[in-house]
Amino acid sequence: MSADILGTLRNHGLDLSCIAAHWTAGYDVVKNVNEFQPNFATVGFVVSYVVVALCFPILLGLALYAVWSLAKLGPARKTFSTILIVGFGVPLYPILAFLTLAIFWIILGVVTLGVAVALPMFCAAILIIQLRGELSVFVDHQREMNQEDELVVEYITFVQLFFGIVMGCLSFCTFGVLAMALTLLKSPLVLGSCVVHGVRHSLPAFTESGNWCPLVFLVWCFAFVGGCIVVILGILVSMLVKLVAAGLWPAYVFTGWLRIMGGRRRHDVGPC
Image (cartoon, rainbow, N blue to C red):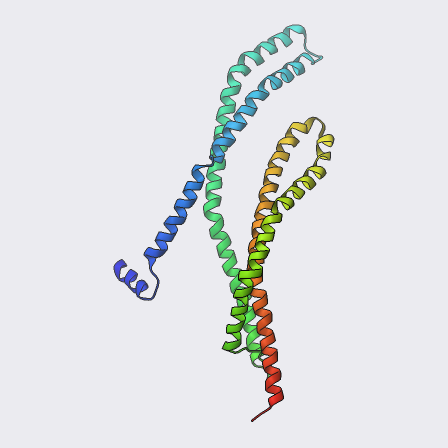
């Protein structure tokens, strides 16, 4: 049964083996890329455990300072409380921190995996539903326009379309490549300007953060790296947009000129 279905699809021009081969190639590319970057859950667990371990002396000192600052306790009870905190806190703190962080990052990894699987399906379903609704409105509107008697249809001939495509290809190969090259040449200047602008406007945050300066610096480092990645992606998208626009826009304008000139010529000649 499955062989008959595959044969029918292949006869209609849909070769599932080709689709499977492309999917496998894409999966291999993503897998090779992931091999060079660490697992976020492992990195998060290691970093958070190191931070929690480094914070233990500070937390222990603050706890002892709070105990010895109690006004209603005498020296004996403060000493006994100190012995309990040091005796139980020192051995239990790393164990409890390890278990808590391990559970947290395992749950976060599972949730992230679930989101990675369910989110594309949800977004695809929402997109299809939205497009289906918009398409229904568009089709109804076009049907109403077709029923109007005074509707003027703007058309072009295949010859005009051919010359428009030729003009688009010529512009794509000349002005498109030139615009993309200029964007690539000025990209270091754009990246450097964005970095300088972002650093200059983010420096006051360090002076206003006070005791939170280390945490603000850590967040700033992540924001700095993320901002640089966004700027680089923006430059790449700009290059592609200019390259595509250099081919489509001249072809569209040139075809419109041909249509206008053809309409005027037919109007001047008149009926034979």
